[in-house]
Image 1: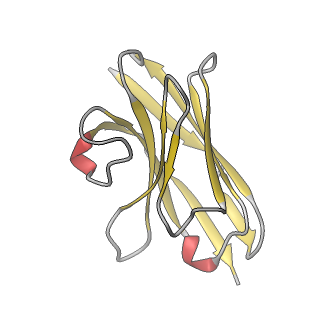
Image 2: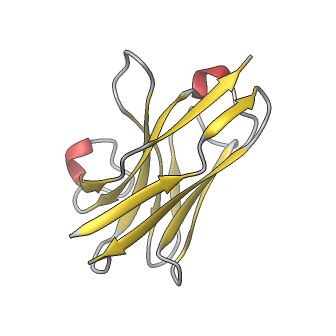
Length: 125
């Protein structure tokens, strides 16, 4: 079993920043990448960013490229999502997930097996 717990969400004004964390516990080895997704009210869950656990390479959705940065701390089994220049359209519940199949940074949710419970990010205008 793998447990993923997100934290760091909150309310921020447009232009502000937040850093999300995703702490992994349990059988966390033998996986390739971790991804971040988000889901806004009434919308489909969408891919945001991914990071390869071993070498730290990253991949971003076009909508967040240049504003968001994904990183990881292998000693702490934690993945981070630094979000800068936030916009109201970034408002969503953010989830981290473990990728086990597909191309790196896959936007297909079935490429991911374990998911966190999500953390709410609200950006006011």
